[in-house]
Length: 201
Image (cartoon, rainbow, N blue to C red; front, side):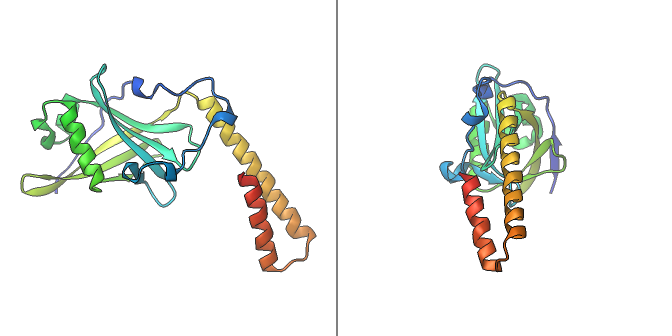
């Protein structure tokens, strides 16, 4: 099995410029996996879940692979913008494609059929590991997406700070309850769950 890898220059995409710079921390909402179609969800590991989007930027004439973390507040996305001539160098299967729409259709099909997996060696990159049939055999190639801050990063960071403060306060409240109350294990667990529910609101 031959593995080919290419890391192309990332150019700024207008597709993802819709984030509002003036958002406040209270306006940031966590996107829940239950609200995302299952066919758009991909896991990096047991804890990190992303929404995958494959979109064409007609003005800049490139295909964008985008990963947005869900079920968490994340001040960044992982993205790869790649032009038609670049994707043709990634793997020979794309050389027969006349335009980015054909490439996107292939990527969407592979994603839908679980032929795209994620891996990570460095925190600032995620690797798309793609398997596809080429003539008579299955081949594998990689595309590397880089981490990029979202436009409303200040609001995102404030939201993360607020969440961190709430968690610290919650842990102190649990610690104080345990220290000041002689309770059995079940009662303690019930109280922890009560406190957790209060802070999750």
